[in-house]
Length: 561
Ligand code: ATP
Ligand code: MG
Image (cartoon, rainbow, N blue to C red; front, top):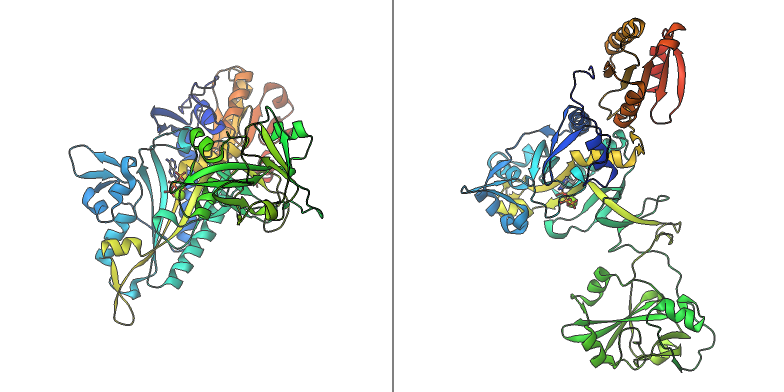
């Protein structure tokens, strides 16, 4: 493709609302342009990458026996009413005004609708049906470019099985296919086992990447692969040790020490000698939650421990319940239920609030000084803590979901009456799985992981072009002749070549080439040509080498392998 002909409107400046690197570079490299909030038009360069991602997905889905469908995005609303998901999706679901249609945010209902009509017997299963199709979700906060859009492309696959073992197999096939797809795309990913939650299945996994734009916070161990959402993640945190001798309680005047940090500075003690108290209200009753030092209460874990949703007590309530303000509250003398983090189980000689403003109590032995404390894992893990499975250091970061595999079970087939005749002659609901990958997310996450301050760094698999051929002075006859010949030759050799044949300054061309990020740049300049050479630059490493025209093809073959 000649750059003088292809529409690649690059931008020098960072567009106003773009913050995350993928968003910045997809705009700056002329891959896409916004049309509305969370809606993007793909331009030729961007769409070439999308097609490469889709091709990798197709190959790996076909390899596990997937059959490609193309289901309508415009769906009769009544089908969605059969499963109650018009309500479940709420405002996320786009409706077509004055018509009984919705724009599909996913396609479980439509697949189940067709399965109900065509699948009659156990003999017709297993089936893997997939498609690559536009999805519509009225996301409340579309952001970070295509990472969270209102219209996006999803590969969604559905498995139909006659047995639960069959579902396990279909699920395992998708798990393998997903690992291959993301590996081929050059993504560094990890897998989080998610709870089956609202979709009502019996197991699911999310394929995630570490990204600044992510909305999930996860703990991940690169050593053994342990990964979990911080809402449920655990770690090997050191427990608070028990001293051989429990000291007596001591009331200490501690003015202006509201926080743990202020308290440890004031008393010159260690963080782990403190027990921090928070009061929550559950079913109208107060519960004191005790954490070690500065450990954060994990609300999800707390909710699970209490089997109910607690709310923090208001300041007036606090004063009424404990006689003190936040910052001076503690377990000794507290009237009500006390629950504490597991690591405090053996704790003694601790400092905590005295339930009297500006006072703390020292020498607290939780076994001796407070009755009936219940212990649960309540803390939020932080970076650097020991992995619960291998003990090595874990990291906590924000991540974004690339793909999701899900054992749906019979949720949809039950709701919609999609049954089959089993071997034993009885009618049973089809056992289903659903498996999604966001195409634009794959592209954007690749860029999040592969860029520098100058632009994108494509690998061979996703690059819109393999080679960027730069004719440096397109007014000079020898440069024109040599670069035209190379363009023809490299294209004939099977490479996708972007030929910068524009009459522009060399510096301008170099900047554009680094911004667009093709893996190999072949630079044709007058001086080197005189020696029968061109310069080859590898975008990933910045390495440059003069290569003779006769050896160029072999050289490119080697570096692109
Ligand atoms: P998220 O938790 O990020 O909102 P989700 O759980 O709603 O995603 P699924 O319904 O599991 O997503 O959809 C499958 C895949 O589709 C996701 O893994 C993601 O790659 C992609 N996807 C979902 N929502 C969007 C969106 N708004 N924009 C772009 N891609 C999306
Ligand atoms: Mg999901």
